[in-house]
Length: 332
Image (cartoon, rainbow, N blue to C red; front, top):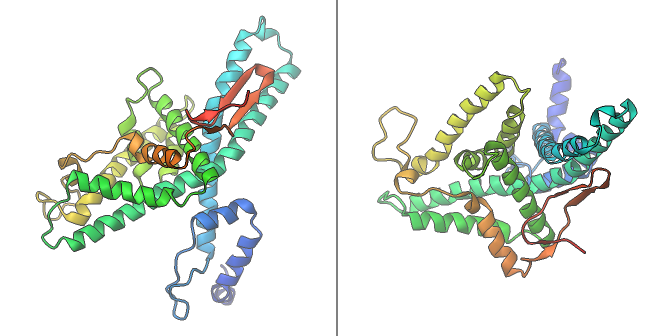
């Protein structure tokens, strides 16, 4: 802002301005504002009220870009190999005319965009679940520490009970279509990253890193950064930066329980704890991030077998991509 009086006017009417912007930002921003409500105001006269700000709108736009970019990375990784295999299977691929090559490239880009548009919205719910799980689990640990005046560390069974309880509370509030759609997006996301990290079987060799990405403060942004760095044309600096960031994320994840309950061998003045959760033997598996609780809820709702809604067909190359799960039933 170049004018102090104009800045003051914007500050005074920020809530009204932000509310009007939200009303005209389209369905995607409207959905994001429902999934990630604005923080409660601390301003006198409006304390406890949810009043959108320009900074809040910026955060929604950033989240939308992250989901859209991640959806594009995932879609391209699924679609590009199909078109490449088709081109190699042609009797004389080098004899394709320039026009034919342009048409094939246009088909591929349309296929990528088609999956991207659907997947981006599904990723909104993936991020909401991951962030709410992290937030509510942290709050639950704090409550446990307050209740336990002796400061005794929790047992592994108690940690798992609290973690699953948090997940269960979040997932039970999801409508059927959202639950199934989010389940499909989780499968597509995790399987894609697993394949990128371990192209040859077994594909779970990088699960420790995948877990850290999914449990950090910005899970989909980290997934996005990994996929951006994991291409042949990516500069080595980008890869080094990602690995350095992951070291910091690992420390943050390990510190979650330490900060709440303390750690007996933490050195004075040191930021890093002893890894209390790890000392207790509490280490999550990929299936415990989402898949176990989702399968249980699908079973409870009698939705273990359900109609596939994420099948994308590309007849020009005789290929298809499924954004789904083992429970999807493809119509005959």
